[in-house]
Image (tube, rainbow, N blue to C red; front, top):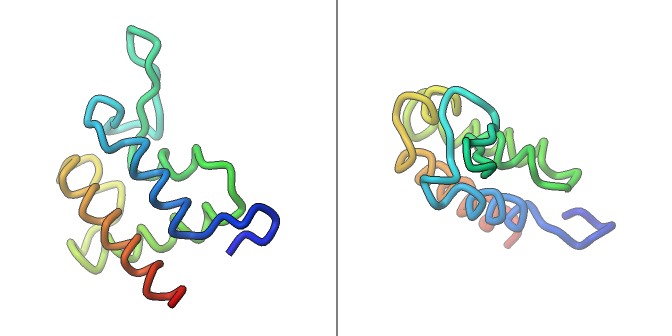
Length: 103
C-alpha cells in the first residue's frame, strides 16, 4: 500500500483499467497517443504509466505476470496482437491477484 496517499495496488490497477475500458480510449502500437479530436488513448502499459502513484511499477510487474500466466505472452503482445478483450482479462486477473495478496 502507498502509505502517503492510502492508494493500494488494487486502486492503481482498477483506475488504469477504467482508463481504457472503453475501446475508444485504448490504443495499440503506442504507449499513448492523442487522436485527431484531441482525445488521449493508452495501451495496457500506458494506462498504468498514467497513474500518479509510486505503486505503478509494482502494477506493471503484476500485469506482466498475468499476461504470461494467461497467454504465455508479454503485455505488449497481448495489447497489440490479442486485442482489447484480452487486455481487459489480464487486468481482471491482476486485480484479483492484488486483492488476494491484501487479504
